[in-house]
Image (tube, rainbow, N blue to C red):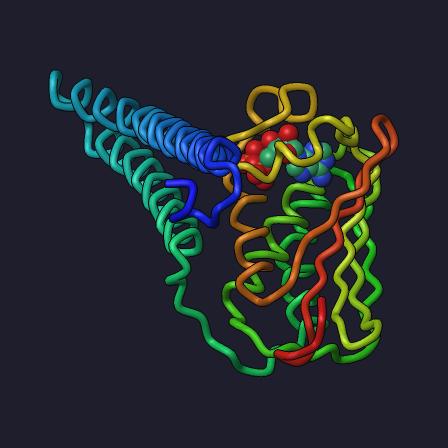
Length: 261
Ligand code: ADP
């Protein structure tokens, strides 16, 4: 065996082989654990709206109702179905991105214009929460990309910034270009994120209880989806945060396919 693997000490080679195998097994184990956790979390998230839906329909069927009452039940059922559909769509996007089979457009997209659209979509939400929403959108910043996916990326970040900032706070959205890279900054004066949680928040279903208490919390997919979309464009998302003062999420997207991000 020693000769077959190079004539040096067979023991060394075998040790190396064993440690490589062990390392691979360790990685496989971690991957399986992640898949198991992902499936368990996904099932749990789907079960909640399904249980609500089933309960509402059962109660409605049990005793006669007025047409108005039926209408209210149907409206609420439709809302739950929308939530389930949104969740399933998010899960599909993540699964496709993870498998490297996310289908994407590669057309010129002006991020400044897209940011402006997202600004006006979410301005109403900011106003309703008494949050000042500023934007700094000056010139076109064009990247090759998928318009709908990029819109979703920006929407998720701005939606979070507004969602996690208290009334009276400030959210700011800006787009610029630097060295062949488009940069979108979304900053807020919200609660901030502790250093040890900065990576965790990009994992599916991970929320920070301090910053996302009770009803404000979503399914916990927003940032994982945002990161997958940035990665699929050859870009990345960076977050800087000062607990108690606020956070800034920066998206970097290459302006040409070859440019570094
Ligand atoms: P969701 O908002 O649905 O919970 P996300 O993936 O968008 O899921 O965010 C994950 C977690 O990261 C949130 O639950 C929250 O704890 C934290 N987070 C995200 N954005 C912010 C922000 N701007 N300020 C403070 N915490 C944030």
